[in-house]
Length: 173
Image 1 (tube, helix red, strand yellow):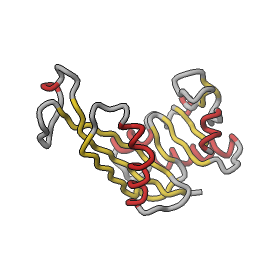
Image 2 (cartoon, one colour):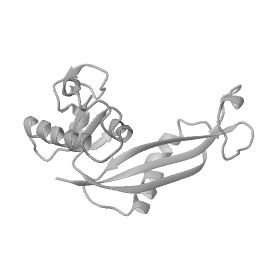
Image 3 (cartoon, one colour):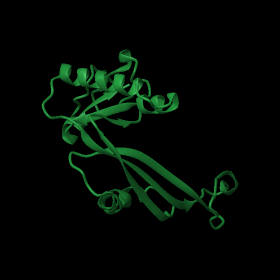
């Protein structure tokens, strides 16, 4: 099954740690003692949503908790762009899909097909590397026991309590 995937890009300014003012980028310029920061990720949803609704939901539900860990955040911008539809969503050295009752073998077969499709697409080598992050090496595939891909490992796909709670199947690599 294919699902809509979106690229989320978040930028904000925040206060520098004391003594770090000369080591951070401030383009475009900011007042002394502040710098630009940001994060981005891909988001897969079961159903299509307007990008402005996704951005508003992130600002309402995600940003307050994230901002609480930052130093005086301000100047927030959240940009959401539709990337298309696919079966797997990339994350940091892992990929995930929704659990709709697939067996482990069905999940692994689906992921193999995804990896091959990406490997032999018309994307540049750099794009393929950033999409796959080592997933082309099947020996890297694993799950985990506690939601920490760097912790104790299990066979792929991951069906740890955190994946089950999110309703996803994940393959770390």
